[in-house]
Length: 297
Image 1: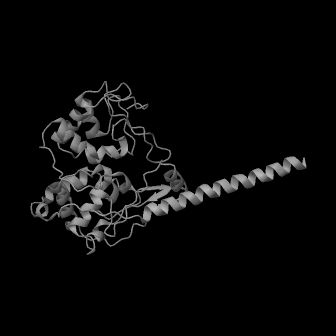
Image 2: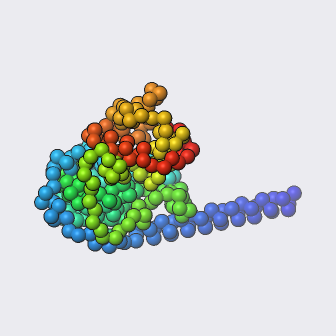
Image 3: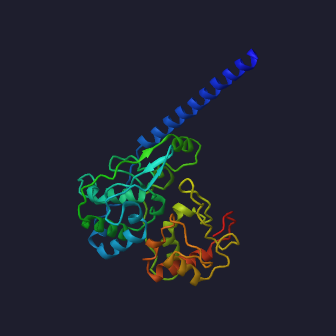
């Protein structure tokens, strides 16, 4: 019995040491990522700002996920509060745009690169959705942000909790999206706004953060919620769907079988897209290779 108790005691000690080691490594690695800096060398946005459209910027703010995260008024809000994982609180943009450090180019860098004025990476910002957004679209969003009335509230701060740090250690959590995007200065040009594969691909970039670069889905975005759907023309995805089914879903949040979409799918924002945008996205999705996403749409 003494040997058994002694063995159990040492087992507890070993497990505690291993857990402490993993937590320590996770903390060190995540802190290193949070303090890392990037240099953004995109061409100045000045020319694009001169031709920016406030109406277009308002449309993009409403339909590309900005309002979903930062609120319709841009004042920020509590987005996700997962105990022991992470508390995500997108910032108050009405205060940000009044900070002298946030020039037009710095705002563009935040959108397309996920980088703050000091070069550090934004936490959880879905930069991959916007990294190829062209100058006119980015400039229009920035111009619209400048018109938002001041809302002098503090929505709080994002908190990176232990489990998120451990998941990041093992490559399972996109803590700092700036690590995953291409920061090479390059020309970004939106295709003509027509019902085409090219324009659909451009618009559908906003879907990749949830459905993945191959659109096969399967990602659990918040503990306890269903995985994102497979959008490819596979039997486990949209193979049996028609364009009218897709448009109805995006306008009403209702699947062809009558089921309502989960709240995690921001269909209400996408429902404000123009017909040409939604039909182009559908055209692009139909052009994708079928992938077994292991989840039913």
